[in-house]
Image (cartoon, rainbow, N blue to C red; front, side, top):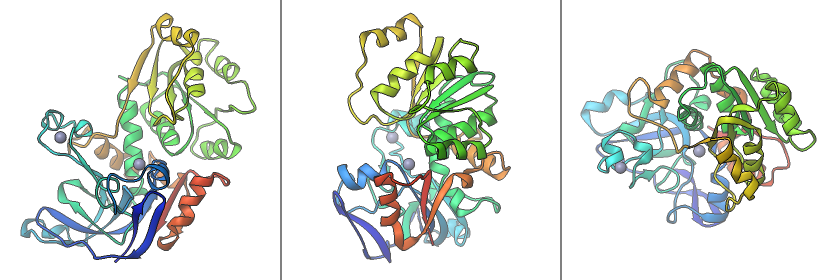
Length: 346
Ligand SMILES: [Zn+2]
Ligand SMILES: [Zn+2]
């Protein structure tokens, strides 16, 4: 099969490799769509995967082509989404079914071979059969959709709240979509590009501040009767934005940290003081919940797309042929043209 193999940092080769051999407990999935995650850029160009060679790509969907276990044969030919985290199922978080906190997990596309290939070997436990009206492209966005939902579910309720998101990238706008579904009263976005505002408007979110050219604090005050927001979300991962977040959240408010930091987090004493003086609650979030229950992020995500409440396809700005992954990676690396979700399809 053809696959993109990361041989070393910054050495991603598109080449012919052996198709994985199907084994008990696994399914061989033919990839139909695979999204490039923001985290794939440093993973491929700067830090590498956990070992080499590895096929990256953890956001994908496709068709089950092979299963060896008699009891799962009916999966063959089925369209599936994939939860990329493979938990150990032995540690204490796994015993409590909080697999996102597993201490010894495997991961498709960073710790083992993932979706930038024609075929991937996926544990049957990680497969989600897709409703008919969900496309492969939409299903390839399930992972970021669930990461976005999981982050918001950490907040102990958003209904009736004013929320400001710094960083309207893929996850940022997916969070904005979820906030609408969850009944947030006011959704405010702070970004840096007019194209982001345009895309947000297409998703029904009007309140956008260009942090480069406009006064952020004024924007927040105008939209919250001078109070500040109930919830602020740091979706960029740098000190300056973290400082702005602490400035615009109201006393007694909540700060949600979701972005991977680009450097050490450092705060001026006066800014740090806001956490104390405003009695803020700070939330962290990691990955998404997947316990097969009705309340899992993955179950809720499928439901929301199926019913048309969540529209991930609107965030796909680039759909490239399978053999043009490098072009997609470069668009995201160079940041010269606007993108939200870039994916390859076959
Ligand atoms: Zn991702
Ligand atoms: Zn575990």
